[in-house]
Image 1 (cartoon, one colour):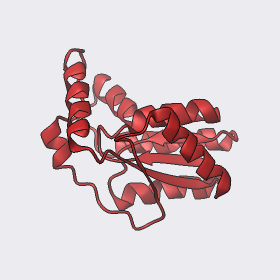
Image 2 (cartoon, one colour):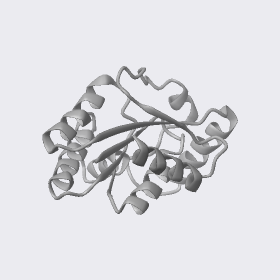
Image 3 (spheres, helix red, strand yellow):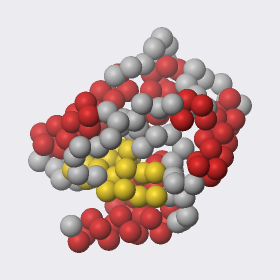
Image 4 (cartoon, rainbow, N blue to C red):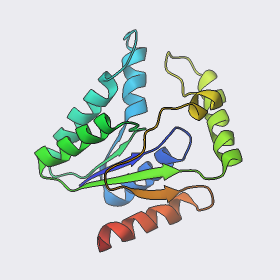
Length: 169
């Protein structure tokens, strides 16, 4: 299974993806980490490279029979179709989960805390600030996607809900 957790920064994707990876015993791929590694290794600019590396890592893990949880913004139809292609090639089930935070104040708090924490550490990659997140070009989904709202539920509760839905669908 290839489980994609998508959504704009600061919604709680990473916390939920890590929890699901632990419970499933799945490989965990975070595109932000791949992009940070590329930039910190001297890459001047990252566009499609981070996603391309993540697609390859997902394919390798799926070929070993492992489930993969991918944590990425996945903002446009092109990245969504690329993930679907990885799943098709591996003969794996694809599940898209869009993670949102419907509480704007909580979402902003998360983004600002993450941004401030990253500024305290060295490195060329840093998460976007609130203005960048508000202006993110995140396009609507035209394929099947489950939506999970992290505004009022604990990560553990949401992970249990996703796992139950995986079993029953």
